[in-house]
Length: 149
Image: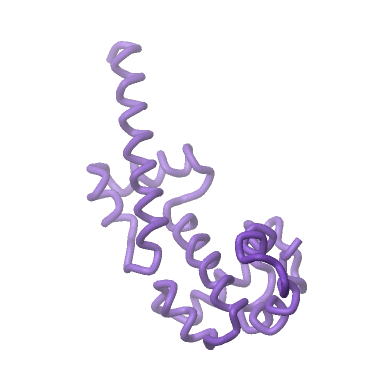
């Protein structure tokens, strides 16, 4: 492969990866798996996972779960849905997996977040509340307190 054709292929792969990321952003509440995402991008699941991680710093599954947790945080801040209702509303089919991933990303279980976050972001416009309460990877999460600042 010549340098120009390798560059062209790389740009095509990046465009496909952007489409995969956009699909995850749009369809986070739908049942999505790496195989389905890869088929839609005309790539193998392994190739998609490697390229997605290289481009965005995390696997497609981790990115999907981060989107789901972000949406769950917003729903939990509203306070009108139970943790179980939020779990299913964001596309998770297992409350245990949802709670585990939520705790890894946010630093506290969803029930604690629901109880404490509504008052922590009270009075903030929703766009600001979303930004200051964005989930972080586990290595950055402060265990015991929601990452609201």
